[in-house]
Image (cartoon, rainbow, N blue to C red; front, top):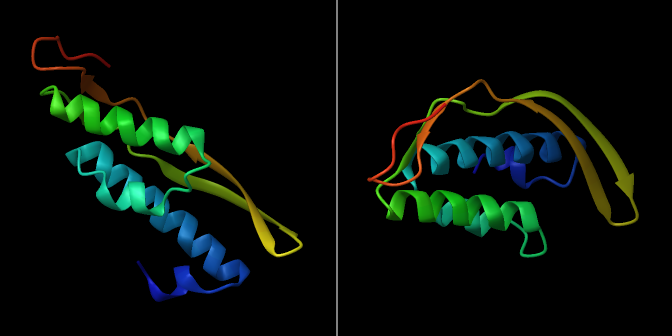
Length: 106
């Protein structure tokens, strides 16, 4: 993780979001969800669902190719002791295979 992503500042929050996206793209490309799982808050349902999707797909012999998320815009909102992030992402169409016995899809 970049040092700046550990800072308690607007720049640190932005750096963390970019790092999280990079880690998520890596997990989608490889099935290695260890770092994504570590970085994801246990209360984040969507985060857990992506970890499970990547892990289960690769365990079944499937894969994801292309379609990496890209950060377009980031808005930070500061609450008492918390920073809220509204991130706009784009993801081009990629390809995936749900399991070894399934056809590749877009």
